[in-house]
Structure formats: C-alpha cells, structure tokens
Length: 69
Image (cartoon, rainbow, N blue to C red):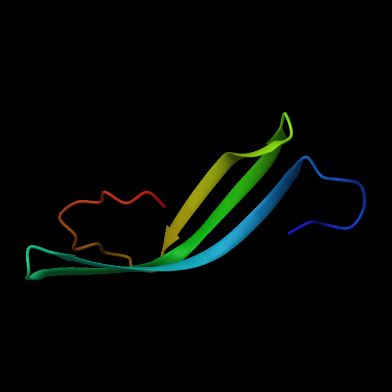
C-alpha cells in the first residue's frame, strides 16, 4: 500500500468484492465489483477522501440497495 519514498499523505487502494444477500426466504441478490478508495492522512489518521464503486453487472434486479461498501 505504501509507495517508495517519503511518507505519503494520500494513497489509492483497490479491492474486489462479492456480496451475497438473501431476504424474505425467496429473494437472493449477488453483487460483484470493485472499489477504489483514495485515503488521505489527516492529523495522523487515514480518512476516506474519495470512494468509487464499479459493479460488474450492467442491470441490477435488486429492489433496494442498503449496503455500505
């Protein structure tokens, strides 16, 4: 995560995710994608400066999205 050189104040972190959700016995959703975060050091702590979510699906059949990525 840390590039070579002096201590950075901002880094980019990328991850992949797979979310499986089952609701009300019959509803099943599967979401697959990637997340790109830009973290910025503020007062000695890392804070999320920007978050980008990219889903692999082009059409979502879910009735609602209540996820915190």
